[in-house]
Length: 421
Image (cartoon, rainbow, N blue to C red):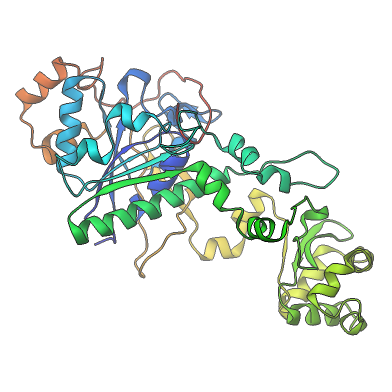
C-alpha cells in the first residue's frame, strides 16, 4: 500500500495553492475527491491559458494528477446532503477559500462534527479565518509585497521584485499539507478532529525567519543586495564569468579556504581582512571587487569544473530548459509522464515528497465529473433511483448527471493562483 492509501480527503480547492498542497498527498496514495462547482465549469484552473483545450489545461494537469472529480452544487439542499454523506465516510475536508467563506459554507469542524467527530477541517485561506483581513482575497503576488519579500528581492538599484515562482502559494500548500497530516494523526489517536486554520499570509510572514529575528531583537533592517548576495556570508552570491553567470557559496570557513586555493590566491585566506566570516563581511567591497576581477578572466564552465571537484559549493544559473535536462534531474526521476485523452502525453515534474523505496505511480488529472459513478455508487452506495432524485433536486448542478466529455470543446480564459474569492 502507498503511505496514505487509507486516507480520504474531500477537497474544495481550485487554482494553485490548494491543489498544490493536496497533489503531494494524492501522490502518496490519499484519495482526493475534488468537489467542482458545476455552475462555473469546475476548477478555474482548467481554463488557464495559454495551453488549454476546452476543460483541460496543462496548468490543471500540474496540480491535479492522481485525484478524483465530482461536480456538486453545494448551494443546493440535495448537494449538501451528498457532501454530508461524504463527510461521514471521509477523514478530511480540505479547502482554499477566502477566510470568511468556510463559515458561510459551513465546512468548519463545529459545522461537521455531528456527522463525523474525527473529521479534520483544513482551511488554507489568504489571511486566515480571524483578523482584520480575514474577508480579503489573498494572492501570491500581493502577499509577496505585503509580507516584505519583494523589498528583499532584486538588485539595490532596481525596483522591488517578486520571485519568478509563486512561492507563497506553494509554501502555503506545503504548510496546509503538514497541518492536515498533523490533524489527521491527532484525530486517529484521540478520535476527535478539529480545524486547521492556515493561511498564505501566516506562511509568508513566518518565512521571514532569521532576518525577522535579527530585526525584532537587534533592529536589523534587511535590504536588497547586489548580485543576490547573502546578507551576511561572503562570498555567497552570483558572479559573472567571462561569458555568463554562476553561483558560489562559502557557508563554512573550509569552503573559503578551498576557494582561495582553487583560484590560485591562498594569500586571500590568510589576509587579516578576509580571515573570518565577520572580517569578510566587514571588508566585502574590497574582497568582492577582487573576486569579480578574477572570475571575469575565465568562463563559468572553467570555474565550475574546478570548484566542483574541490568541494566548493557552486552551480550554473540554468534556465528552465537546462534545469529539466540536468543529469541529476533525470537520475532522480523528477520528470514523469501521464496519458490524457485530450492532451496526449503530458510530461511534468514529480512531487519531491517521498517515502520508502517503491517507485511512485501517476494518474492524469481527472476530467470534470469523471468520478461521478465512483462516488455515487461505490463510495456512497446510492441506487440509480436515488441518484436521479438528487439530480432532479439540483445536487449536480444544471447538467444533472453529466458525464465528462472525451474531446476538447471551446476554451474559456481565466488566470491566477492562490486562494479563491
